[in-house]
Amino acid sequence: ILDEMGYVPFTKEGAELLFQLISDWYETKSVILTSNLEFSQWNKIFIDPRLTAALVDRLIHHAHILSFTGESFRLKNALSKSN
Image 1 (cartoon, rainbow, N blue to C red):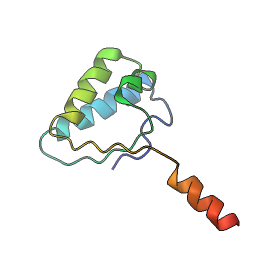
Image 2 (cartoon, rainbow, N blue to C red; image 1 turned 120 degrees about the vertical axis):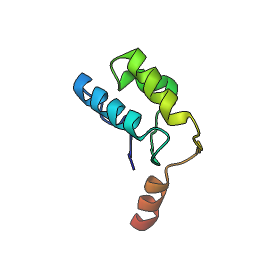
Image 3 (cartoon, rainbow, N blue to C red; image 1 turned 30 degrees about the vertical axis):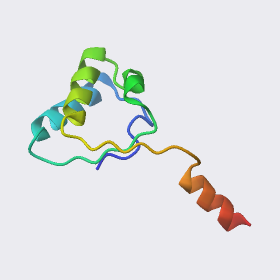
């Protein structure tokens, strides 16, 4: 489970290590990933556009992508507790 992908940008080495991990797991293991960024914005967190494209390609092949819109659940929950 990779939570909040893109919250903090990766170094070149970190991006390469994550790519290696995802490549090793490709079609053999399950991955759950959350992010507030659309795939088109991932070049901002992974420095190399070719590495980003290859990483996204492996992640979305056979994927079930769930997209949520609207207000933040965490913010809504926090505000309801403060009243």
